[in-house]
Image (cartoon, rainbow, N blue to C red; front, side, top):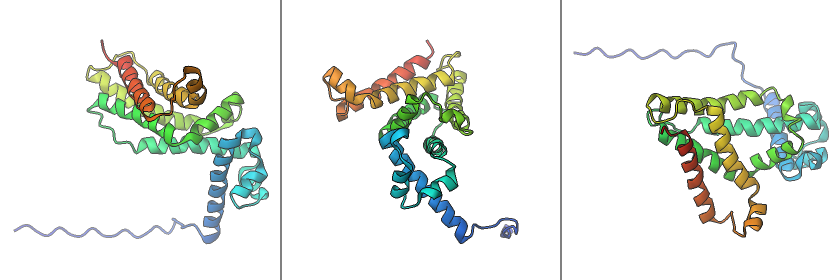
Length: 227
């Protein structure tokens, strides 16, 4: 006869853990509302055109709250850049990857990046704006390197698995593969309007997008494949 397993005792919540109060929750909601509005305004109008009063109006808040939570317009812009990177890394971290299948995992990472850029055009337009400023704002961020490290780490794990299994080149580097995926996805989408006119083809048409998705995937897999 098997003895019944004793029920685990429920641990009491620590007295040191303090739940946020009403004011704290309200402050957090206000900050998030401003940040969300800022991303939309900066993505549409750039840093120069993203006026404080326009952002506060979109957030249904006040100009002074922007300065209270972010210190300045530049501080808000940096926070917006950090937020879009955070969202990207958070979404990527949720992607289901099987490290025992490195080829399929790398394919999944490529498709995730390509589709994420399409679904989040604010990611591209905000980075376009910051590149026009030669990265002067994001270079002041204390978190940008943290987010990039997370993205590189995922690719590094996939590539190491492929190298160990003898399907990827031993000299392949995660940073190079990341740049390859990002550039092939980002350039196409950020320049699709001018390229459509230049090439005389609608690069936004579903068949064109599908074709480029296959091309990117094939290109990356060929770059890392062991000869």
